Amino acid sequence: MVDKKISVIGLGLIGGSIVKALKEQMNITNIAAVDNNTESLNQALEEGYIVKGFSKLDEYIFDSDIIFICTPVSITISYIKELKDNVKDNCIITDTSSTKGRIIDYVNSLDNPPCFIGGHPMTGTEKTGFKSSYAHLFENAYYILSHTKSSADSHMDTLCKIIKGIGAIPLILDAQLHDEITATISHVPHVIASALVNLVKNSDSEDKKMQTLAAGGFKDITRIASSSPQMWENIVLSNSEKIKKTISDFIETLKSFMEYIDTNDSKSIYNFFESAKAYRDSFSDNQKGLIQPLHELVVDVVDKPGIIGDIATLLGQNGINIKNINVSNSREFEQGCLRITLPDSDSVDISYNLLTDKGYKVFKI
Image (cartoon, rainbow, N blue to C red; front, side):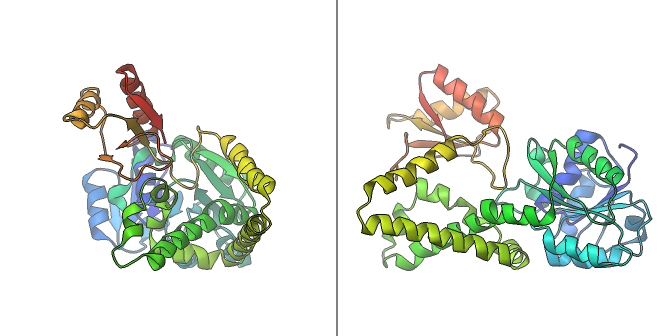
């Protein structure tokens, strides 16, 4: 794989993380990129992640062995249109869009399509841009791949090796099934999170009491509402039917719950929460999903001078990079008052052990 010539179109969070992972984890050096953001291109060049950068498609890109298109769905299709008659016959084109059906349908509608495999890394953050990308974004994350009529098993095997090489777990799914799953576990949850935030915004008083108290748990369950509006507009429009179906199912669930309240059906109310808890508790902690987990600890501490400094010093002396540390003033359903945000799960585990060894009562989010 080290000899492959790879191009990445779109140097945002995903595209930037791909070029970093290819270089750092697979030792692939012949990487080019296309992006209309010259700042991102220059940074990738200066840091040695790419050998060439272009603002538009070029003959150099057409000569690639593998091309990753890391752009929204509508833009991805535009790039496929431009690539399809210009790339060499054995070039594998793939994408990273959150929906697969529209793109796969377009490729399959072509009389003589290029070798295309739909792709979707099931990971990400609320941050955007090359500056937010990092090489281990894909580690232990499922990476969905979907066949088209122009992709052979040998092409899929090649791409799977790349996906494994950057630390992800390839999983081959039908495009329509993929879109049904993502509508339920990612797309509609983002709609709901944004709806909850807008509910508070529209219900709040002039003195912003709701906003003041909307911390702790509310802030956590609506964290994904901070994602890019442009990206989510594109996702919703490209998977609209499946999202509408899932929203309808969700509304029926809420209607049933309202009936439990109206009839004072305590048993059904209990079962509603109990079944959700049992199913939620069965989820694996070892895999990444579409919604990035929080890398946070909550520490139960007494409010006294120097306590934050003591904890920060302990972690800093052991090589732990603290991204944020703050006192939580709204602590309903929380088990401590000091929140520490860390860069990754390894830092969480190390910090947890360091703090508990020192006698602190610590809880993982």
